[in-house]
Amino acid sequence: MRKKTFAAAALLAAASLALSACGSGDDAKSAVTVVSGATSNKAATILDTPFEKPDLVLTDTHGEKYDLRAETKGRPTLVYFGYTHCPDVCPLTMNNLAVAKKALSKADQAKLRVVFVTTDPARDTPSELGKWLKGIDPAFVGLTGDFATIQAGARTLGISIEPTHRDKKTGKVVSVHGTQVIAFSPKTNGGYVLYGEDATVDDYTKDLPKLIKGENP
Amino acid sequence: MTSIKSAKPVKLAKHLVLTGIAITGALALAGCGSSNVSGSSGSSLPELSVGASYMPQPVSTDMAAGFLTITNKGGTKDELTSVTSDSAGEITMHETNGGAMEQVSSFEVPAHGQLVFKSGGNHLMFEKLKRRPAQGDTITLKLKFAESGPLTVEMPVKSATYNPSTGH
Image (cartoon, rainbow over all chains, first blue to last red; front, side, top):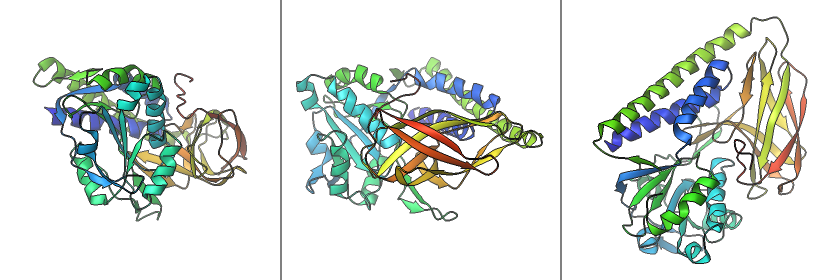
């Protein structure tokens, strides 16, 4: 059942992306309105069957070993897969979380863990990641390491990434980021809420107080 | 907020509806592609204007994104071939497909249509910025086209989380 849901979401995402790439004729415009209308009014998707937290042991921005399960156990945790050479969605997503976090009480801010896992570990060294996250929120955790490990971890969350590579035809660099933020509950440690890349500061500001408590937004 | 319950026929129906919309979207896309071809047979020249431009305040001088919409009121398609600015060492054009960002060398501006750069889709990528653009700054861009003369755009720098649909 969950698979079916994802298939529908993927189709929808594919269609809306294809549309925005085209995004010109009047026909396309009305279709865009319908698609975004169906997805944008609800930012959060609550999963009946939560994801298990991936067993990721990587390197943080201080060059220290970071065991995701051990470090974030019992803490409200948001995980996102992206890369720092990403001008658009990756910094927007992390900045949205950073701004929304500021609306929380100091105590709640201290509870929250925001973990950015790079999908481009060859370029995102611990120091590069650290420099980038410092410009967004110094408390955010940045993880890098072996690509295969990161890819396997992402896959358990239904996020498909591939290594940064050069396009065979154009010779241009292609990098891939995830399109979802996954919220893990402090109560169960399960990943129980998904946010797509359309989620705004307002969506996160509204939902974070619930996520801190492990409640449904 | 959307709760996905398993084994509830009502919810299943909703998913089918979503899938249906997605397919409609794909069909609309096919329709859009072919209309461009017929548009290019028109005799009037491309007539371009630029709107809705902004740059979200970037994290560093390494990388920034820029968005805008180019509208073509003319009956002939045009092609955006380059974007330059004194503020950045390099500006490239990208499209995004399912989370993968790919550089392209030109974008078509269809006859009687628009070329849209927006967050999550097509974007301009600024590299080697001379200094970090801050909210309130303006970046001056020069757009070059295959047919029309160059256009100058004054792109405002907005907050890092600026959302054009809400305006903040």
